[in-house]
Image 1 (cartoon, helix red, strand yellow):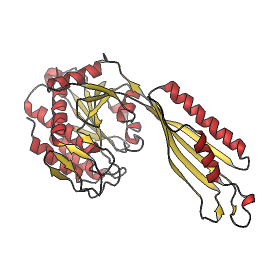
Image 2 (cartoon, helix red, strand yellow):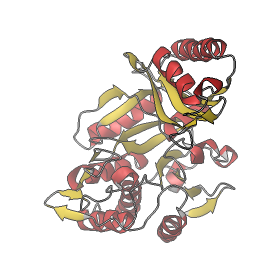
Image 3 (spheres, helix red, strand yellow):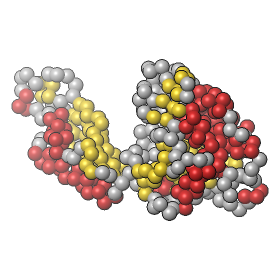
Image 4 (cartoon, one colour):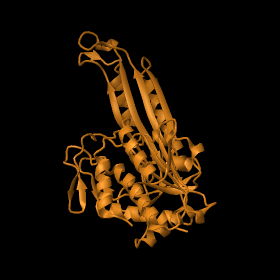
Length: 365
């Protein structure tokens, strides 16, 4: 049976374990112990992703497992979090994130499985994947040993808002990185003998399409740095950005446009050299309304008395990588809002709804 007090305690305990990207060992050990206590067979792949197997009831013999997934890492500032419960709302003290992304997802899976096992109802076989290094590139999922997975469908507990929100489409992302080498010179004595790498970068930024391009395509440059001192014409500059689209054709088109701009600016500044690298980080997915994986999740949402809402998103998640490997695992909301900010909150009632969904999903016939 679902237990609100236990769920709240689980969530707060998880939040108090620091797990910024690259420092997931402590929370991994905690979750490993908890899953083993539920009777799961827990293992890790070479990247350190946690994979747990629960065989299900004998009545479900021969049934393929379903996947339950969340990620173990958080963004910064995420160390020394002090969670405080105000009625139904959990928040930090304002100096850090809360870490509800994705600690609420982890808590949902743990409470949902505990309740399903305690219910005595026949369970479907379950594979749990708690990934590392999701933030900033889905690196855990991209390095996941998929030979260890046998699920064909499942749920990724990593969406914003209520659990009834099911993400049916997400964009692909290409990472754009440009290294510019100009010519250094003394800015006061001989600036005409220099070529400013930052000026070259500025020309690039004024010509590439940035921001909201259309309803399914965006681009951004999040990092521009270079130079040493104010009196030196800067010799080097670095641009780090991205292009996203739910349309692969549009993504390819704007990727080509970025390359063309870098080439044009390179010809405009012949004394500078530009090395640009655009690579795929993850691919898009879009499922139709009649997709069987979507139908299974929607049925479980209705079973707990909620109305499923199908939405697309501009963000990526481990679901993108699962789809690339043939696993239709769709993200749902985890009761958290204002991801990646110090204003982040979690609604305990909505996190509990997530656990109810998890239980309903793994005990569905």
